[in-house]
Each structure stands twice: as structure tokens, then as C-alpha cells.
Amino acid sequence: MILRQYPLLITRNAETLKALISRVEGLGVPRTSGMFLLILSVLQSISEKNFKAHLEFFKGFGWSEDDFLAAFRKAPTFVRFSLKTLQRKMEFLVNEARCAPSYLALRPVILLMSLEKRLMPRHRIVTGLKSRGVCISNLSMSTYMKYPEKKFVEKFVNCYKEYPELIELYNVAPKHRTAL
Image 1 (tube, one colour):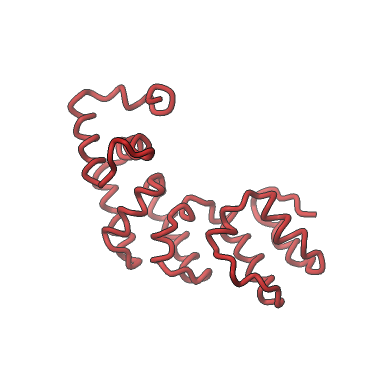
Image 2 (cartoon, rainbow, N blue to C red):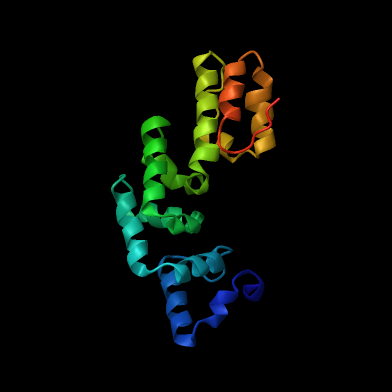
């Protein structure tokens, strides 16, 4: 499995690999975890300084170190994003989408999604539907953001043909969309 999915790990010298394994275990990830190899791969690709910079960045949004580490264990690849990219996502999610930073800490997979191709267009559609009185208030953001494209379009775009301006808004997003 390591050879197939993470071949760069075996190119490390033994001492470096042992130190990396200790670092992963020090973050509370046991070797038996299904995330162990992914986290090992992520940590071998970023420096400790960069990792700490990400921790400090999220502390600025109110996350504790425990929040950051829990989020990292769930979706470790978010630390590969630049701080500039994460800043834009967090500002949108917190300021415009009104997500509490603690909500995002528990659902870090949202941070892996494209701001322009998924987060913004879907938020606009759902907000537009709610403003027109469509009752979808019991649906959490993480749920509709995780829907596959086809299911989202069926549930939130094609079902509401009486709002063609929303369909147009969704179709203008950078990703090629095929609503209707």
C-alpha cells in the first residue's frame, strides 16, 4: 500500500522516517489508524515551521490547539493549502456564510473544497432559495456542500425552475455547470 499510494515515503532515510513516524504518533494518530499513512505523507511534505504557521493562523480564528489537531486528524491535507487560500476561505465561510469557526473545526473537509467552484456558488443558491421562502433551514451547510454535483443540482437548482435567476447565478460559476 505504501509503495502504491505514498512511494516517496520509502525514499526517506531510516532515521528521518522514524522521526516522522514519531511526529505522527505525537499528534495522537496511532499506527493502526486508517489516516496514519495519509498524515505521514502530509507531514513529510511540509515543514514543522509551516505546520506551526497553520496552527497559529487557525488560532487567529478562535481555534484551540486541540481544535486544530482534531481537524488535522480528520482532513490533514488542508495544511497543504497556502495561508492566503485558507484566509480567503475562512473569511468567506465565517463572514459571509456565517459559519462559526468551531463548526468548521469539527468539519474541516469543508476547507478542502474549492471556494469559487463549490463553496460560493452553493452558498448563493441556498441563500437565494431561503430568501424566497423555500424551507430548507434544517439542512446543514456541511451536508449540502458534500453532495455530489449531480445531486446538488437536482435538489437545489433543477427543482426550482421558477427562479431562473438562481439557475443563471449557479451556471455563471467558474466550473462548467449543466443545470437544467
